[in-house]
Every structure is written in C-alpha cells, then in structure tokens.
Amino acid sequence: MSMIEIKGLKKSFDDLHVLKGIDQNVDEGEVLCIVGPSGSGKSTMLRCINRLEEPTSGEIYIDGDLVTDANIDKMRTKMGMVFQSFNLFPHKSVIENLTIGPVNVKKEKDSNARKKGMELLERVGLAEKADEYPRNLSGGQQQRVAIARALAMDPEVMLFDEPTSALDPEMVGEVLDVMKDLAKEGMTMVVVTHEMGFAKEVADKVIFMDDGVIVEEGSPKDVLENPKMERTKDFLSKVLI
Amino acid sequence: MGVYLKGFLIACKGIPATVIVSLIAIVIGAAFGLLLALCSQTKSKVLQVIAKVYVDIVRGTPMLVQALIMAYGIPWLLQSWGIGFKWDDFGGMAVPAVIVCGLNSAAYLSEVIRSGIQAIDKGQMEAARSLGMSHGMAMRLIIIPQAIRIILPAFANEFVTLIKETSVLGYVGVVEILRRGQLWNSSSFETFPAYIGVALAYLILTIPLSKAINGYERKVARRESAA
Image 1 (cartoon, rainbow over the protein chains, first blue to last red):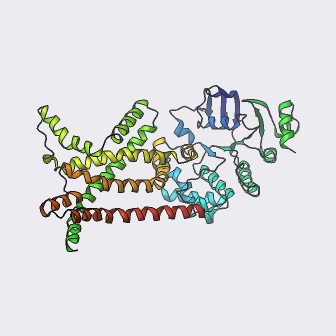
Image 2: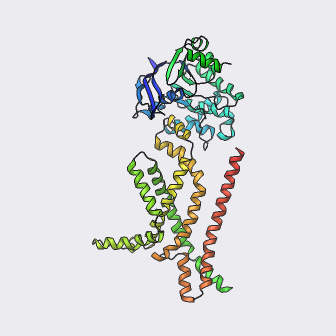
Image 3: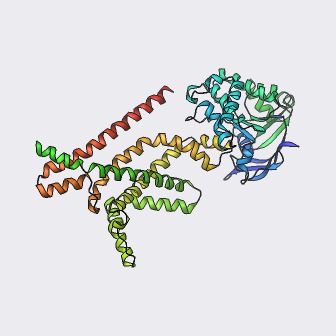
C-alpha cells in the first residue's frame, strides 16, 4: 500500500487555480522529488499533504487513512515538515526545539524526549549546540536542527519544502548530506527542490510540475536526463546550465 | 520648604491605593485584553464584532464617565429594578474603580496584544501546527511567549498611562494620590504645595518605570543587532 496517496487534488486561491488536479502515490521508503518553475504549484501541493493549505477538492491518504480537519493534528504527527525558512522557535534552545513537540503533543516524558533529542542532534552533527539558541546558529545548522525537530516526532513521512533555497551556497551540502542519510535509512520523503544534483542522486521518482499539473514523471534518469515533454526540456535547459 | 515637603508626604500616602488599584487593574486588563485580542482573530464574525464594539466604546468614552457609570450608575439601575445593591457590600468603592480601570486598559491592551501576535512570523504557527499542535497549544507555547517579548514595552507604557489615569478615581470615592492632595488642600489652603506634592508623587512612580522600559528596549535592540 502507498504511504501517501493523493487523489484529484485541486487548490484555488479565489480565481487563481494553483493545482488543477494532482494524482500521485508515494510508496513506503520512496523518495519523491518535485521540481518545476516557481509558481508551478509544487510547494502548494506539498503543503496540501499536511493541510497547511486546505485542498479545494480531492483527497489525501496517509498510510491508508484519509486526512480530514477532524484528525489533522494526529495525522500531522506522522508527517515531519521542513520549511525553506527553517522556522525554528527562537525563544527555545536547540534541544527544547526538539523536545517541545514530543513532550506536549505525544506526552512523552521530558527525560526521554531529551535523550532522544540528543541522539538526533548527534545524528545531524550538532550535539554540542544543544543549549544554544537558534539565532546563534548558521543557516545550515538551523536547517539541520529543523530536520532533527521534525524527526523527533518519529514521523513516517518527511516533507521538505525547498529546504536549501534560503541557504548560502556553502551550507547547502551539509543539509543535503543529512537528507541523503535519511533517504538511505529508508525514510519516505517528498522533497520540493531546485537541487537537480540531489534529485538525480537520491530520488526514486521525480515529477516535473508546471502550471498546476504534473507534466512528466518517472525515474530521475528519465525526467532529468531524457525528458519527453517540451516544457520539461525547456525548464531543464534553463536550470542545468 | 517645609510646606512643600508636607504636601509631598501627604500625597505619598495615596501611593499604596494608586499602586494597588493599578496593579490589579493591569492584571485584569492583560487577561481580558488577551481574550479580546483572541476574539478579534477568530474566524467567528460574532466574536470579532463583539470585541470591536467593546474596544470602540471603551476607547471612545472618558474613563471618568465609565467610572461614574460603574460606581454610581449601576447601583442606581439595580436599585430601580428592586435589587438592593451597594458597592460597600462588595468590598467598597475601590472595587468598581479597579474593575473600570481593568476593563479600560483591556481595550487598549487588546490592540497591543493583537499587533504583537500579528508581528510573529506565520511560519512559527505553521511549524508548531506541523508538529501536531492544536491551534490553542501553538498559541500558548509558541506564539504568545514570543509576542510577550514584543509587547512588553507597550504593555509597560500602558501601565504608566494607567497609573496617571487612576487620578480620576477620587471622583468615585477612592482616596488615591490626587484625592489625598485635594483633601489636604481643602483643609490647609496650601494649594500650590498640595498639587506640586501630588505631581511629584506620580513622578516617583512613573519615571523609574519609563526608565526601565527604555533600558529594556535598548537591551533588546542590542541583542537583535548582535544576532
């Protein structure tokens, strides 16, 4: 069974039709990369999966369960989300950023959450920053903390919304490395990205979106190296220079 | 000089009343103001309108008039309905005074709190919700603690304003700073020393507070620029 099922997803903002009917499945352990020009609807599609945007119509299933307004808080604990602008909680230390979800939402004991949080910080190479505040961290470090924060909830799926777009170029690598490790460990991932190199290397499937529809989908090799559609070729010729 | 000192000391006797009324009122104001701010941000049109009308009425009328309505108007109304109501049975005239000051500052603080909440990046709410927090939990744990830091200076300014505004409460039977001075003036006829004493008594409350606010704002500004 698919981990994520998207059926007939449409999203409009007033008269603006951002998503015009998306159908897509993501299997367990699969890494799906979504590429496309800005304004193509790829971030909106990702945000509809965990309902940060409410779909105008269509259905999202996570692990077989329909996502609704009623069960959304519970469903979100299964989906970790990583934002372009990190969105760490500035009034909390790094380790508190990791424990605030598990302690308050999943009612984990503080000591357990801390222990697990430290392990996650270890994993993203930032254990020594546990008691720092986010403002004292570089962008790359903040994004690695944000990934650890999402992982602290033990999600079944990780959603990444252009996780490296706000980073200085020299910090992109450290964040992508963490994501590659996650992929290797078998995490189900949906990644909106402009990093074609990452998509080629890590993705099991790539979809190219433009103007609110999926124009082309397939293996990274098919979509990124031998695209069939004109729009895909046109986009790739611009970004791959 | 002695007469000025006496005027000042007499006015200072009113400081406890002024401070206690102001402190209780600012707590009421903060709690009720937060409630109003949250109402104005809900999806419910009814709650939005109620909050808006409340704020408009309170801000659009003098506090003295509100105090007179609360202290004398409401007992009169209740008595005209055959309900024997006296504020003295409910703790004295300081009670309506505190209530009016609290409800009054709530109207001003609700605007301060609302703008503080709106100043928080919306990514904070999204990050909190995406961890599975409910809207209420996200407000409590993530948004409001950050908003408090932003609104603290405006909040303290409102407290300074409130301390000065309590000077109207002499009209509804609270013997606070100004009332002390007035009473002394009417028995001693030392008019200038009496009111200068009153002014000084307010200043020793308000100036340290204002200095503290400025210090806090400078500290925050330094920290922001260091980050």
